[in-house]
Amino acid sequence: MKGNYLISTDAWFYAPDGRQYRAVWGNVQMTDDSVLGIKTNARSSNWFAKVGPEDNHVIIAGCQIHYAVKCDRPHVGYTDEHTVEAGECKKYIRPTNIYIAE
Image 1 (cartoon, helix red, strand yellow):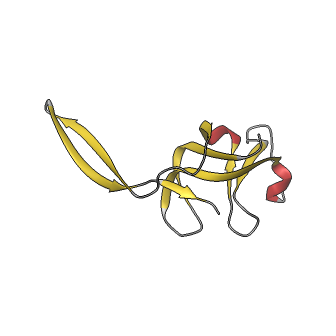
Image 2 (cartoon, one colour; image 1 turned 120 degrees about the vertical axis):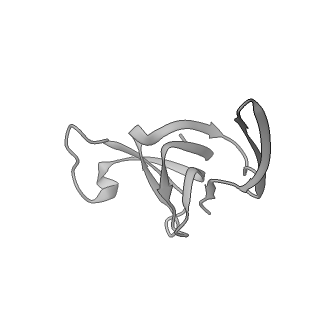
């Protein structure tokens, strides 16, 4: 895996800016548990994705990666969203939940 990917995760995570996200976009480098400085055991993930540059990256455990999409920079402004409650569709606008690791 080389290049810029949009990676969605199974759970929310905190990014270097202190906010919570469900996806990260940036240059991906696959690595093993040596990136953590410790050796993991059989019940832990033993491969990781390092997303972003050396000074501003996110490390995601392989078991937390849900999707990986190779793409140019995704839309990161506000996004349209909707929910269906009691058979009624309600539309709203929310901030993106994609962290851009550059």
